[in-house]
Amino acid sequence: MTDFAKRVTSIDISGIRKMFESAAPGSINMGLGQPDFDTPENIKNAAIKALSDGMTGYTNNAGIDELRAAVAEKLKTENGVSVEPSNVLITAGGSGALHASIMSLIEDGQKVVFNNPGFVSYGSLATLAGGVPDPVPLRPDLHLDVEALKEHFSDKKTKVMVLNSPANPTGAVETKDTIKAVVESAADYGVTVLSDEVYEKFCYGDAKFVSAALFGDNVVTINAASKTYAMTGWRIGFMAASKEIIDQAVKVQQYSLACPTSIAQYAALEAYTGDQSSIGVMKKEYEARRNLIINGLRDLGISVSMPEGAFYAFPKLDLDTVMKIVAGGVIITPGAAFGSNGAGYARMSYATSQKNILIALDRIRKAVE
Ligand SMILES: Cc1ncc(COP(=O)(O)O)c(C=O)c1O
Image (cartoon, rainbow, N blue to C red; front, side):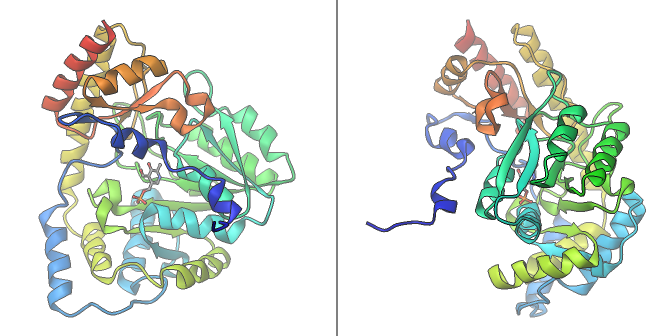
């Protein structure tokens, strides 16, 4: 029998995929964090043009210059974060940016702090890099617990914190004050903050998105075209950081995937510099779906907080009920798939039509009555 590396055998396949595999035919899929919108036409056309123009070779390991410049410009004008194109590394989705930054920063045994419940990749990437995942429970209102985070920062083994607002799986959007406090207290202890901003554009009501990099030099900004432009399959994201960090991260990318896909980079260039109106259309629709699903769940007597961003509802549902709902034809994900503190909850992605949400609510009603 083959012996495998412990850093791989010690991590498990994502619980989200497992639910998907056990679903009945005809199920409504509220399991995956994937926009149900198609990539806007102007972006697709840019890829077609790149293809016919023969842009099919390797690009720079750090990505094409035009896209690095477009991202730097986006960060400056939309987020108030001043960076040069040389501070930007184009990656294979937000995942590629998380991988390159954690691999660059984490030494054996060093800790990566993140929210519990939180996005499934953070802990596994820490383990793959030889580090130690250190999930910190959220407050009962599903927001970051700054005092608890400070305690974890003070542990000498803590090197990195992943901050994620708007958050997966909770939909929580942290306030400017909270983000500032987290970044500043991380800086006090020499901790680098990876700010995962992939849901930046999807904040609802009064919730406002704020970039963590506004509050310190100890921040790596991570973002992607994936959710913003409904481009999950194109695999384009980026990280923006000090030149020092980029110089290391580019080596991780060079020796793992060489460069992100050339034609997808040209598509992303159009995404970041072309017509932005598709974002507003998607946001408006997500917000209507959010209201539909939250009101629907509450009408069924299910306790759920109003998510301020992203496209997930995170109601209180025990595992038995989750399994009944899945058996009843609605794929949802048990909260424990996002960390121990997610037990007793479930994540429901509302990146699906209002029609599907209404069918799902009806099936949930039958499953819980
Ligand atoms: C919080 C968070 N970060 C990063 C990612 C990865 O995004 P990408 O598809 O760009 O790799 C996801 C995907 O679901 C996510 O939810």
